[in-house]
Length: 321
Ligand code: GRG
Image (cartoon, rainbow, N blue to C red):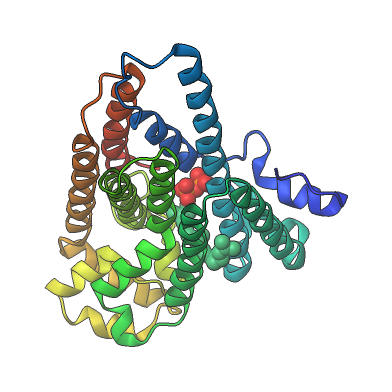
């Protein structure tokens, strides 16, 4: 799906799909597990062959959603790196750094257009609407992050809304698409959505902790990339509740490295990191509860996949990279 006609565009679009730099492929993994988790008990009367070919066809369509989701994700990474003028991604040079901004933007556009074609081929307008809305959310979230007033930068509600748009919308709506393709009820589709939403939020909250701590528990060991770019995340917002004087530091901006150090000092004295981890754990529990609320099944694949989805909620909050 990502192979282009023109060689330059082909190498740009394939860049992050090459072996070794394909990333964790977290989203497609979750989506294929969700697809299996929704397999329901087999009615005794159904003939084996008819059922097998139907379930193979469904699996292929759900796999297509997993592929589309990863293509949208990679397209957003390519554009994000242009906006941030990043020089590395996934441990290698970012595409904008290696091939320039123009090709990186075009490669992102190309991936998005191929994702659209694949989406149209599924001939399900509700699913098309869901994923088109996700792209709108990614753009909205990025714009919200880029253009904040002082009050918005210091608001937990604004941060959580932006986090939903930038990180959780893609996985939650794709989980819902997986359920809709399987012909599940509105209730089950909402549970799939709730799982993705809460997993996505937990994932980003921990990402925001790791930006400060890296693999260690101590502050300043992470890349500090967010704060250095002036992006205020949950740990600082919680710290600000305990130390309102931190607001003045945030308002000054973080171009001056001394200001970063002052903010880190306040953060160290506060419960900011712990409260962010606690909030992530709450969302992880809500994600697990959504899976546990799915209708009972005796399908072996579904039982194993539900266990894996619940296990992932714990991995997301205990990860150190
Ligand atoms: C072109 C669709 C499109 C959007 C343009 C730039 C932009 C608008 C949105 C930015 C969206 C963005 C980069 C959100 C961050 C999401 C995130 C948590 C990225 C890290 O994902 P991982 O950890 O990375 O799954 P790997 O490398 O494993 O895939």
